[in-house]
Length: 304
Image (cartoon, rainbow, N blue to C red; front, side):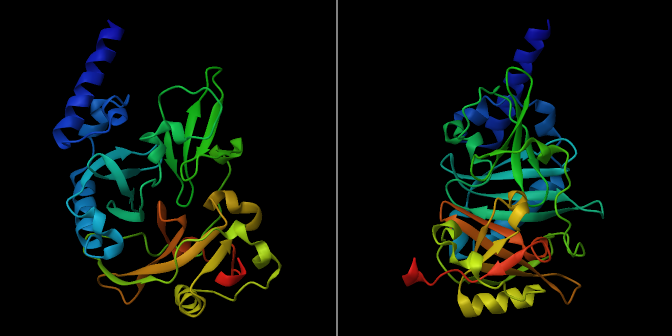
């Protein structure tokens, strides 16, 4: 009887996914997620995802978002968030992270573009660079800067996989505290917020390809305005949290920024554009980086 109920649940789950999307990647259609999870996606989350996509798609950087299909999945228990997979012809072109706020609402706390965005190994498990034999079920978690899978091998041991690059993480990520950010006043993009300046200062680069920045003096950056000023001057920066780089999948290549105008506030919410390849560009709130590490000027283009 239990097996029959499990099979019925999978059939219903696939039906709901198929009804919401015309082209579903095979792995999504067979994912072992219950129908209840999909039925419980709040309408406010779906509306925020659609509104944000319509605003982002007006920029060339996010032009692939126009008329895209969305697949919204809950993140792990206790996360109070959702991963929004953005698909064109069943292929990933970007993502949103939507998180519950302290005011009983929702906000977009991260977004990105590219063919291998966060958690894209859910679409292509062969990309996961781990030799460990895993179960099919994947457990997605997000702590504000680090996105990862918590999966279990056949011996019952937990394994943590970085959802941005497939690297295996230390076990303590599941119970250790992530770095504390200096500001929590701005929770993320709300439905009434409007996009402002998008600055694409540089093409993506790999901070590890030339490590001369490690022996240079860090820049004195204390706020978003200071970071934007330095990017306007140097075009690209490196963020490093040194011993805590794991929490950021770092060091990070900072190649631009995107500001949002916050309704009923004089403040702007600014996201740092990061990424080593156009296949995965992440936009992370600058407030999550300030005070948690240092910013450096990498070697000039002709020195690499």
